[in-house]
Length: 549
Image 1 (cartoon, rainbow, N blue to C red):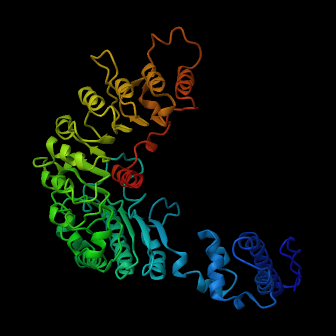
Image 2: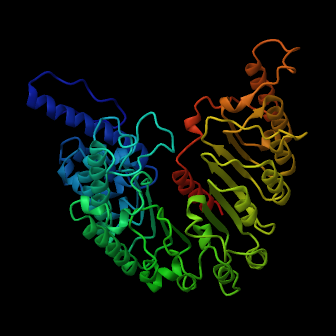
Image 3: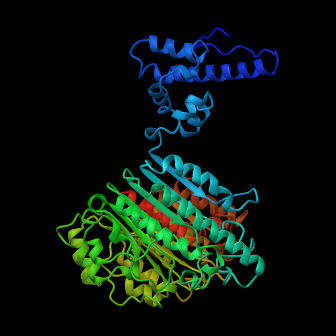
C-alpha cells in the first residue's frame, strides 16, 4: 500500500500484474477523491482534524472505503455535482448504495428521445427511464420531463415545419415508425406516472410532450390507437394514473402539462387534493387536441386561490374565468400565458372570451399582472379582436406559416402596448418575404422600436427588413435592446444607399448595428435557430416568464 498524503500527488502506478494494477488504480482514484474532499469539507464540516485522518485511513486502504458510515458518505455526496456523485460512487458498492439517498436527489431534469445521433429510437431509452423512476420516483420533489418520441426519424430531414405526414396509413414504412414512436411514448408516460403516483413530497411537476407529429385528427378516438398493442387501455391507464397522482399529492406548487398526448382531460383537475389546491402557485394545462372542452373550468379554478401564474388556451380565457381571477378574495395573479392557435378557432371560437371591461377589472386587482401571448397562424382580424387596450401585454410572439401580419396590426401593437411590451417575435416560415413598408413612409417595426420604450427582445424572420431600418432600430433602443435576432435572409439592401459606400454592404451593416447597440452584433445565418418548434418554444418561454416574478 502507498503512503498517503492529502496534499501530495499520487505516486506512479507499478507494472506488477493485472490484479495489482487494478487495485493500484482504485487506490489512486480514492486518493484523488480525498484530495478534493479535503479542500471541500475541512473548512466547513470538520471541527477537528481527527475525522479527516480517519477518512484518509479509510480511503487509502487502512480500513477500506466500505468502513465509512453511510451518514458521512451521504454528506460527502451532498457537496458534489451530479456527475461527480456518479464518479465517486465507483469507489465501492457501499458508496453506490448511498448514491440514491433521497436527500441527494430533490430535483430531476430529463429529456427523452431528443438529439439522438446513434440511430436508435426513443424506445431504447425506456429502460433507463424505468431505472430512474424506480430509484427516484417515490421521493423526488421536482421532476421536469420532456418527451420527444419522434425526434429525427418520422419527419423527413428536408421538410419544413408544415411538411408533416397526414396520417400513419399513407406509407407502410411511416406507419411502422408511427406505431413504434407512439408505443414508446405511451410506455414512457406510463413509466413516469407509475413512478410518481404515490409521491407525497412532489412539489414541482413539469411535463412537455413534443408530440405534434403524432397528433393527427381522430388519434384519440380509437381510429388509430387500435394499431398499437393495448393502445386504448394504455391511454386510459395514463389518465387514471395522472388523476391518482394528483389526488395523492400534498404540497404541489407547480403543475405544468404541455401537449402531453392523452394525459390531461377536463376531469383531471377535479382530482387535485385539497392540500395541493391550497399550495399550488403555477398551473399550466395545454393540449394539441382541437375541439376539446376547456381543461381548466371556473369551478376548479375557484379552488386554486393562491395561484401566482397561469397558462391556458386563449379561447378558454372566458369572461367568467377572468371575473373569477379578479376576485379580491384571491391572491393577485402576476403572470398569465395565453396560446392562440388559429387552427383551433374553428372548434373553439373567440365568442365569450374576456372583454375590455373584464381585463380592466382584472388589472385593478392584479396590478402587477403581465401577459405573454403566442398567436400561431392567426388572421389579422382575429388578432385585432383579442388585443384589447387594457391587456397588460409584456411578451408577444406572432408565428405563422403562410398568414401575413399586416402593418395595421403592428401599428396597433406599438400604440397600445408602448409602455409594457418588452419581447416581440415576428416569425413566418415561408419562402416569400413580404415587405411591410409598401405604401408606407415608415417601417412599422421602426415605429414599434421607437414607441415601445421597454423593448428588450426583438426577433424577426420571414419579413423583409431594410438594412437602414435595422440600423435605425439599433440606434433607437441602443444597449437596452438586449436581444436583436434577425435572419440574414430577411435583410435587404437599398442599392441607392449603397452607391457611395465602400466595402461589403453586409459588413458595413454589422458595423453600424454593433455601434448602435454598443456591442458586437451579427445577423443569424441559420434560420432554423430562429424557427424553433412553436409549442416547444411556448413551453420554455412560459416557464421562464412565470418564474421571473
